[in-house]
Length: 276
Image (tube, rainbow, N blue to C red; front, side, top):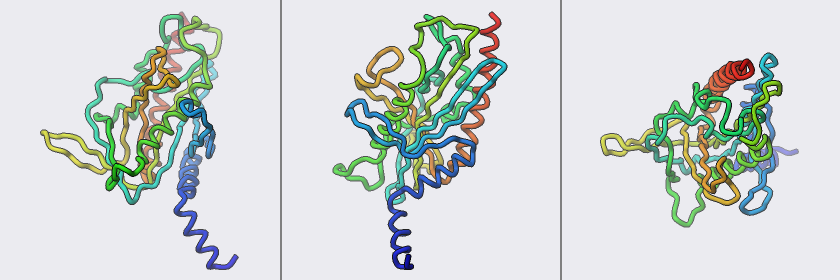
């Protein structure tokens, strides 16, 4: 291959975003995640097969309590150096997230409720570290005729997370807890990684405060007959996280702290339940 062709290929692939996806995959594997590039998921509204950029999974098994937990990161990757993402935030309307985080499970409920406290999931939960949550967004310089990369990314990553959740686990509240069987829990965390600038805007003393951020949490409510919540209602709430690519290593440490706290709390709770 001559140098001119090599340089042309190198310049061209930088525009595609695939190199960034490879870099993010390396970061995740370095942090002991099992990764999969360009996994397929079904868009239930359009009845189409689509691709999500990356999925990453960390597994925890406690043989003593017969507990198995998987944390699934569902990732969409976007380059936005020319149009910084601006997220408008305000205080959340609730204290904790608990089982509102997308999850599926086996042998974790009785016929009335979950056998595990939702407070366990809030121990060191990164969503709670932020005292504001994103509810609206804007791309700098975007006109009304331009497609919103933010909206497309949120919709894609949330639908993908729901798809993977929908294909694992049992229907809750149909059976009673069996203390002699294993307990299995899966969490699904939608994440948008951006190679660019992330800006938060919120009110402070009735004046807009503008700050550059490394990561933010958003609340996205999606109403569709094809995406139901646990009560069978058409409005499903997702909590996608937006994180800058150059902060991903540090953010993974935050996630790992949550995973460890969650594993410890769930193991202790399962022991209590089995002893009753």
